[in-house]
Amino acid sequence: MEQEVFSDIVKNYLSERYPQFLDSIKYKADGSFDCSLKNPAKEFSVWIDTSNEEITIGLEDPASISGCHTHFTPYEDDTVEVLSDLSKLLEEIFTNKCVFYHSNISGFSWSSDIVKTLIEKKAEEAIEFFTWDGPVSI
Image 1 (tube, rainbow, N blue to C red):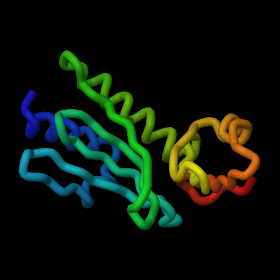
Image 2: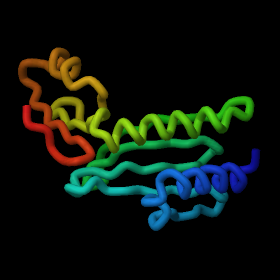
Image 3: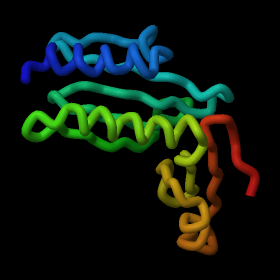
Image 4: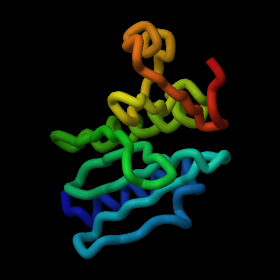
């Protein structure tokens, strides 16, 4: 599949399900695009990129110096499955099931299991958690 076609498919999907991303779309010379959306408290952003005919989605801190991401690559034309995976992760983020967190040791990451993250935390480690709606008090 060509890059422009793939990007059009993703853009159409976003326009139907997540139109809040559309105003931030920035196209690149190869036909891919990226877009982002800040959480209501402006503590982090969720971003999407269509480079290399795959969907990369990530979370980024306000200073844009750290974050985490994952890739959804459509092997053998399974674009529908990739879009479904994108929706699942976005829904986890927007419904506060996936949290963004900062560790003073390892930096930023994300998790859908705060309890597990706290159990694995080192004694000297400080962790701050953020959901889409704002900080989490623990």
